[in-house]
Length: 352
Image (tube, rainbow, N blue to C red; front, side, top):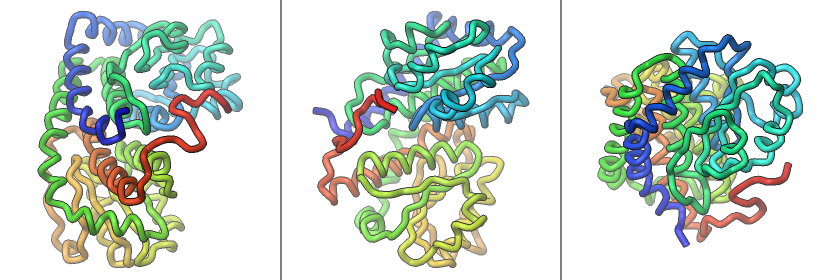
């Protein structure tokens, strides 16, 4: 049986396979169809999913906002029970489900109004989502048996390609960015090897609270990172927008607090970097992440912060920012002898 770290190591290959497919005529026609479907006048564009798929929905909406396109992200469960009567009507809907069988997505597909159009993003071409969508964008991630890793990064990649199609951006730009992210994942192993993982794992083991924070595109990484710790390691971890952390949660920080701060170069990365230094002065142990490179934050950088040169657009940086968090979670799982299996849930959630 494959384990979590096998899937993590497969991510560069999965992204390369995905980029290659969407560069073909067949893949290009799918993206062109997204642009075509968006040409009708809709009341809204909406992205929805659960868990990792919801994290991708947030990234999608944030990307479109940056391109001047209004978009909504909402968890599928809330959409089903509280927003269906309002938000589904005359909408272009992106339903995201790696299995294509998540219970909330299946129920939403059963109550769609006639004027709604669904574009499905899924890893299973024969799934309920694929069958009932007007258009299917495949993830091509391959089999995954435990906590989401390569299906998550593939979901981000396909969702960003769809967003570029909505914004009428050249598909070649997104494909090149995905290829660059895949290549960067290969190089990150050497950076990761330089970290004091024994120290970090001990911090994780003894922490009384674990937070993952970011702003803008990095919020998706924080959400997925916290979910990875919960599912794989069975420890509590909380994701939060970095700005929200100052509005109250900062009071919880002490010397047993461990924080992953995601700040790949972009519009708000300097704010997160500055906040990181403040957190260290409050006693927190902080690990910063810039384009997939993790560093232990030190207070001496407060006055002279390191320069970070952007190799990736801040949205596509999400494809690599999750990598050191995946490594940290896997090491802690090994230290605690957690095998990555599920205790109370299943890979596909079929019950509300």
